[in-house]
Image 1 (tube, rainbow, N blue to C red):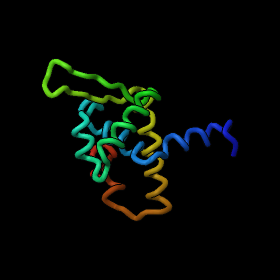
Image 2: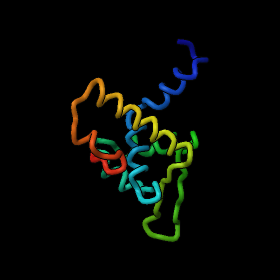
Image 3: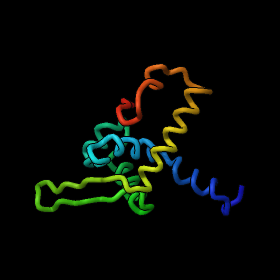
Length: 119
């Protein structure tokens, strides 16, 4: 596949480590919003540096918006999925359905919505 291929370009972006899991964690938040510390705590093994990098990439791509409250101390940053980000959740659900059908026998996973999924 060449670089002009839409699937190639999209897969290279979305398959970066942690991308889909960050999107899923944001989806689970109230109003699809989470604070940096909540994301860090819910993604076992992610470093703050990598989380910051991925959040910036997702913001640059229009998948999420970042809202900063500088009136509080410490400064609070919240991240919210955009309409584009919410549509990617449908892709994640599609991956889940495919995996449950063809690759992974996980009855508890098949019985719950991604919003309540515990990774």
